[in-house]
Length: 371
Image 1: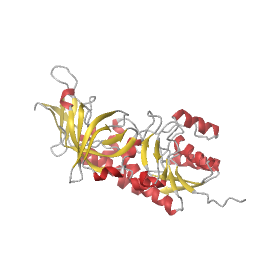
Image 2: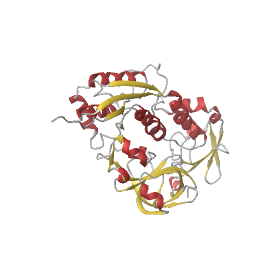
Image 3: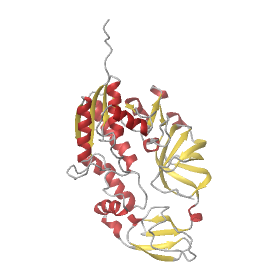
Image 4: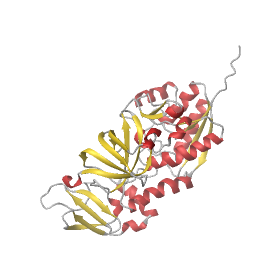
């Protein structure tokens, strides 16, 4: 008896790295019809070495093509440079100019991978978009949900909070149950040339992890950030001068250029972009128990009908640390997060993501009104 079951088609977002390459290999092994899609996000003429830690640039596109050829799948490179500039890089520069600390990886997931790339995948006839993220999607239909990866040290669900619930039915995360070692072992088993390739750095479009690299990107798009201004202690004393807001983030301790009278460490407590001032104080001055979040996405659709969520876990940075909090939803579309215990590293521009055990409820961007 012949099996007439239709073979499902998937598009795999291939960055040229180990994770996305293994995701593609796993889908081939599972019997899907697979095509590889690589987003060219910035200068494809950039010279990179074989040890490059960027992604979606010249060497990486070549690596994605090599893996695709090895797997026997079609591969397409998509020119997304303009979209990436408009949706991610400009947002990155504008954020620093406003005195907030951006997370471009979340913006890329939100506006590039799970919007533009997903739509392109569906236009090409794919049933699913597959990526190499360490997270899990469980359930179907109205009960579908986004969950942490099995290996908490690799979990990337924090960076996925802005993924709308309605697109989860068209996404597959095959690495959700693997550790990084298991992923590399799988790549070696499949004899993929990228099995030992270094991991990509946090911000792919910054050529150097040094602060100078970040500032070059910001100052090219927002030269106004270079204006000098005062560094002021929270007690009102002018401590010195800064050479641009883009040198600082809330919570920063090193490289402030000023020292306290008694030698205790100083931290950036606030960045006032309107007055072009940097405020510093002791760690105690950074204590926050309540703040607002905006641009909220509820991955769990049941939350939209509520006005208060009590005693849930929130994660306030990319570190895998959570703490208990209450969230009160406002009519303005924002919400107030009240922490059970104070946090000393709450920074505007970072994400606050809410969890119920391992399931993502949703999250938003820390927007201000810190107290």
